[in-house]
Length: 187
Image: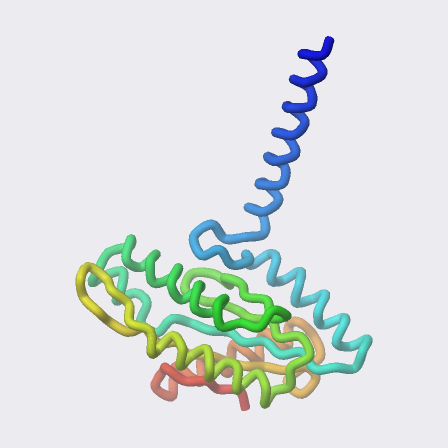
């Protein structure tokens, strides 16, 4: 009976660990270690509701790796994955504890900045952009640099719904690309 009870306890512990791992994998991108797109959507909606309730700003940064396809084409997809991992690490390392870093999809990243004004968010984006630009990336024995184009949108000035804010941040991101890449646009 004691052996059976011990086996049952061990099995329950193992099942709990498996359930915890499955929940983590559902929220975190395995390649980059950042939150996944679905988690971003849910969290952004929740943070926006909080911002409306408490009459405080909420900013959003959207970042895209400039010319990402060239890293894959020139160095291979393994090197492209390395670029994604390193950029994600730099964004996460440079983020403040309250900021929520996510992999939006492909080579795009999003950062939710609760309580931050447009000015503060533009400053944060520029600091993060510069941090990535200054970091050397070694790909197949070549040292190169990676740059980001970034857009910044803020509630309430750029919109009051998830959809208008996402549209706004996307517009600013594409403006940064049109204006030469490796820059932050937000107004």
